[in-house]
Length: 106
Image 1: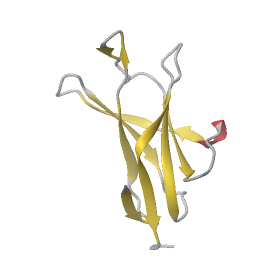
Image 2: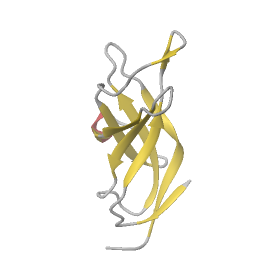
Image 3: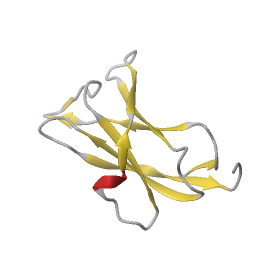
């Protein structure tokens, strides 16, 4: 679980990796989106918003980090999903984390 104070100006980062035929896929040119859904709610297509990649290519295989904006989220507990468009596949992954925004800044 990740806990931040509501109103923080940080962006949420989630490490993402995909393998195809036993090899890691280079995701850096693929569009990435993230969705933050209140715990217990059902994910819908409209929940996704554009995200961006941070890539650490100093290691092999590189780390691909999806980065999404959380500034519009209310206080509460949030499931995090990442969607990557890697034509023809468009996988959606539930991040193994829950983001909790505690009372804080208005």
